[in-house]
Every structure is written in C-alpha cells, then in structure tokens.
Image (spheres, rainbow, N blue to C red):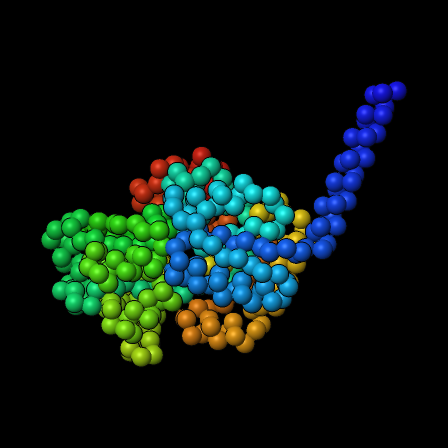
Length: 337
C-alpha cells in the first residue's frame, strides 16, 4: 500500500512539474532576460546584440540585460557559463560564426548544436594597418613578411575565429608567415593596431569603418571579391585580383546574432522567433544595419541550425587542415564539408 502511495505521489509531482513548465513557457517572458555576449564590448557581436535586444525587449515587454563574458577559446567561457544555466529562455548567448571552433581548439567539449541560433547578418572582411604604417599596400606587407617571417604582428578577435581563419588563408595564399596576436574581441584588437601594439588588424568593415573614416587605421584592401565604397573615405579595392588563390576558400560568410539553449521549450523558441522577426522589420533596425555595413539575413530555427552546422564543419576542418587546431574534428563527429 505504501509503495502505491509513493508511486502515486511521485507521478502527481511529475505531472504538476510538467504542467508548471508548460504554463511558464506559454506565459514567457515574465521577468528580465539576460544575454551574455561572449566577445568584448564595442565589437561587432556586442553592437549587434545591444541594438537587437533593445528592440526585442520592447516587443517582449521585459527588460533584456546585455553583459559581456570573454575569455577561453572562441568564446568558450561565456558559452560554458550560459549552457550551465536553466534552459528556460531567460539566458541567451550573444554569438558569431567564430564560436563554432571552440571544440576543436580545446575550449569546450560540446558540438555547436547545443544552441538554437538566431542570425542577424554579417559584414565583409577588411585588412588594415595603423595610420602611420610603413606598409602602403598589401604588396608592401607581403614583401616584408616574406623578408622576415613571423616578425609582423597581426591582431584579430580570438584564436580559431573567423578573422583568424582569414589571416591563415591569406598567409597560405601568399606564402607568408605572420605572428598572430589574439584579443578577446574585435574592438581591443583594433585598438592594438591604432596604438601600434600590432602592425595589422583583420576584422569586418562594420567594426573598422569609423576608425578608417577617422584616419586611425588605413585599409590595405578587402578580403572579399568585391571592392567597397566607404562613404567618407572612398573606394577600398579587393585583394582577390592580386592573389587569385584567395578565391579557393574565401570569402567566408559572417553570421552574428544570439542563441538560446536548444533544450528550451518550443513555446519559448517560438516567442523569441516572433520577436526576432518583428524586430527585423523595424525601420530603426534596417537603418542601423545600413549605417553600420551589415547585410541582414534573419535566419532562425532549423535554417539557422543548418547554417551553423555548415560553419562548424567548414571552419573546423579548414583550421585542422591548416594545422591550427588542438583536436581533430572527427573526435566530435564533425562531418567534413
């Protein structure tokens, strides 16, 4: 008899818990949400998330607090912190495509599919030097790098990230060797170029534009097949015609946005998706993207998960083939592209 009572009590408690969870998901959100950006303040991922969360908070009717938690490899400390929290939709993570290499670079032990991502969009890549740099063209830089291999310092945000991968592809295409200096975000890596702490910086146009127009740094070229006309500065030429082998693996599409734990209730994901879609229709968001040189793509759900699976496959195997990972992608069952 006691055994039956115990089983009944356990079953009742389980049903109550399920009911409460379902009710909470339907009501979501009822309290403030926290979005932890895994890259530094002032960088592209940080800027996109702060702008986007401001719009989504109006739609969802609750405050969304944006914080930064940098460190580790490819944003691993911030991602680990958020992943340990309850999967109820109240803890989001601000991410970019650069985070998909955290596993093969020894930062964490998870595949990226633990997240359900929302992709705002991306911006083309540019290589620049400090304003008074002796390197007037990319050819000047390549010649100097060949003359003294490993002597030229190049900054970017995080080892194994998209900007680092661009540097590795540039080195491979030009037969050069650079000294890579990782920083916890694009903003500090660009500041290092401004102050002369490093010789070169590779980040996105969205992140460099104001520094270029302010003559704090000087672009050597676009790491993109297209030239770029930067209003207030002028035309920045593509580096691809001079180095055709860059076409083999570049450009790599950039994806900046946020994610929620994939174990979150479907009702929560749907609420976030609806708010995300509505935010992207707002004139203020569209103008911000245009003013900051972003192309909005707006993927979420299965479409975004497939996109990040593709990024994880391509980035992980590209870095592995370039000899720049600690672990083989096979260890994590990451399929070859």
